[in-house]
Length: 276
Image (cartoon, rainbow, N blue to C red; front, side, top):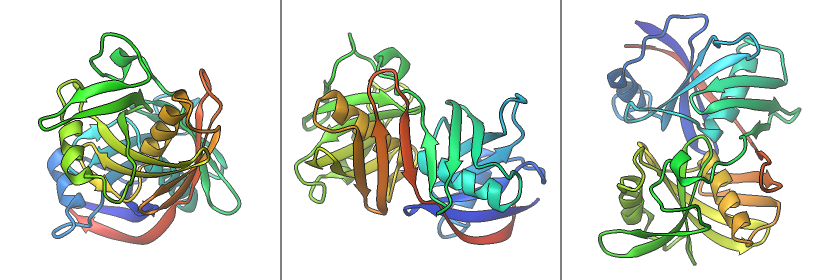
C-alpha cells in the first residue's frame, strides 16, 4: 500500500497528515508506529487522517493516532494543521470548517495570514467525565506519586489533562514526573501532564508530557487546559499568551459555559509517498 502524505507541524508538534478521502487508508497500530518512527519511518508525534464525515452537517471527520499507535480524542495543534491541509489540498474552499472528532465537533477558522483559530469547545471539569477519580469536583487535587505529592488541576479539552504549577519551567523535572502522572491509576484513560509557570496574568510558560507520545514541543489542548485551570484558580485573565518550547499560542476563555478559543500557526514541511 502506497500512501500520499504531508508532513506538517504546529510550533514543532509534528504530524503526518493523510488524505483518506481520495485514497484508501487502512491504518493499524503497527502501521502508525512505523510511520511515526523517527529512524525507520517518516517521524512524527501523531498521524492525522482526513475522512468523510458521518453527518452531512459536518465537513470532515478528523482522526488522531499517537506515535504509540493508540487513537485519541483531540489534538489542538493537529486541528490547525488539519485546517491548512484540507484547504491546501483543495478538499474545501471554506474558511470556517466543521470537523467531527472522537471528542466531539470542532470549528476551525483559517485567517488571511494562514494562522488558524480553533473553537475547542467548553472545558469539562466534572471528574467522572475527564475521566479522573475524585470524590468531588475541586479547583485542585492532591496526587500521590512514588516519591512526592503534586497539587494538580484536572480538566478535559476533549482529552484529559492534569496541570501542575511550577516556579521555573526550565528546571521542572518534566521527564521524571510526566510519565508518573500520565500513567497514574486515578486517570483510567491515562492523561496529558502539563507543567505551567505563570509569568503574569496574561502570560504563561508551559511544558507538556503528552499521553502516548512523551514531551512535545507544543500541545494545543494542553495550552487550553493550562489557561482554564489558571482562570479557575483566579490567576489568569481572559486572554493569555502561552509560550511553549516550540513557540507561542494565544488562548481565550471567557469562563464557565463558554468555549475555549485557540489561535496559532500551522506549517507545511514537505509532501511525499510512503509504502506500507
